[in-house]
Amino acid sequence: MDSAGNESPINTLKSGSTFGPIQAIDNIPPDPVTIVSAVDKPDDQGKTIIVSWTNPNHAEDFNHYAIYSSSEPITSLKGLKPVLLATKRDVIDIPATDGISDLHQIGVYVTISANGANFYFAVTAVDKEGNESVLDNSGGSVAGPVKAKDDIPPKSVFLIDVVDAPDDDGGLST
Ligand SMILES: [Ca+2]
Ligand SMILES: [Ca+2]
Ligand SMILES: [Ca+2]
Image 1 (cartoon, helix red, strand yellow):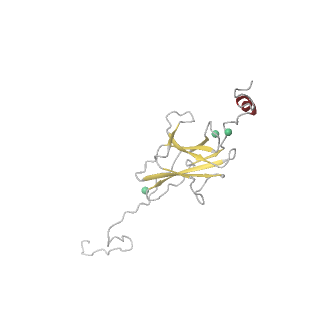
Image 2 (tube, protein in one colour):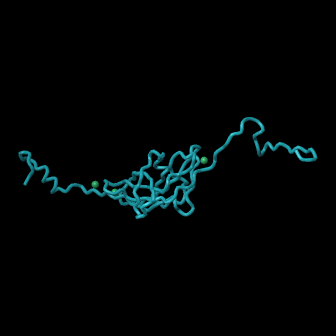
C-alpha cells in the first residue's frame, strides 16, 4: 500500500504463493568437480583406471559423484550415462601422483572394457534433488586419454615346468 492508499495488485503469476504453503525448490547444482585425473591402476591385471579429483564436494546437500567414461574426449555430458555412482563412503584416498604432496585426492576404481585403448573420463557432483554440476569451464572436470595396462605377466612355461613336473614323485623337477 502506498501513501495514496493504492494497494498493489497481487501478482499471482509471479509469486504463486497466495494459496497453500510456500515450497522451496532447490535447483542449484553443486559446484563443478575439478582437477580430475585418470591413471592406470598399477600392479594389477589390467582393465582398471583410477579416476581421482581434488577435495570433497562441499555442497550441503551433496549426494553422490557421477563418473562418465568415453572413447572420445568428453566436452559435454549429452548422450552419456554414468558408468559409476559414488557416495562419500564409496570414494577412496588416492596418493598424489604428481609430486605435490599436499594435494588431497579422492577417487574410485573404474573398470573398463579393454587394455591399451584410449579412454576419457568426466566427474560431476549430484545433490539430493538430482541437480548435477556442470563440467568445469576450463576442462577441470575431465581427464584423459589414459590406457589401462595389464602389469602382471602370465607365468612363463619354464616356471610352470619347474613347479609342476608331471609323472614325478611329487617333488620339484630339477
Ligand atoms: Ca542444491
Ligand atoms: Ca594396470
Ligand atoms: Ca596379467
